[in-house]
Length: 290
Image (cartoon, rainbow, N blue to C red; front, top):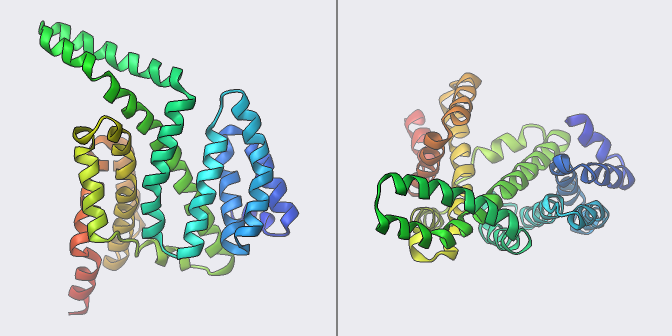
């Protein structure tokens, strides 16, 4: 990966060529987005937008065939890279994920209604079978009323996947920048990511109660959890570093996250919210110094 970053930064022509090539392959759009973000972070927004304009051309072609991932991924990642360059703040960049994710969810709801409807039908069919087994007509009618909420939930889940790849592409771009021009800087920067207390509480509230507030808010439920999740991973890396536990612990935590996602993801999200209130890294650091 480092060789790819070095090649991309040789000249504007190299970065433009690589961004366009990877944008031509939908499964590798995140590499194109990472290259565009690297140019934005290192050379400036003007240079990055020139590369982005060319990289968007394959995305437009794919969009004409109903594949919107490249277009959404490039545009969203580039916006996040611009925010990170202007603010030099991961917390502010992560908070920008929520409104951008909401826009992506709304776009998915508009441009892919058939896919969302099909996925919703599958969930509804599962619910109907479960409710029929319980032989409760009232519960069956309730299941029908849930369709709108489920549609927004499906749109939000699709947006969560897109935004996650965008954030990972930005993280890759930042790590490339650090590796080429400031070795070790990204690790230190990432381990310090911590959301403000008010933001952490608000995001957790949306995650837990968004559906109860409004059906449309259901789309934001998974998206609002993503900044907390990234901040939670930062906390894990920070504590491992402070305790000098070694990479074995990080490998174990990521393996646990992969194998027990439904359990580990909420725990990390909740822990990140608590960290925004109590700053666990600072407490551990004070204990170590004391």
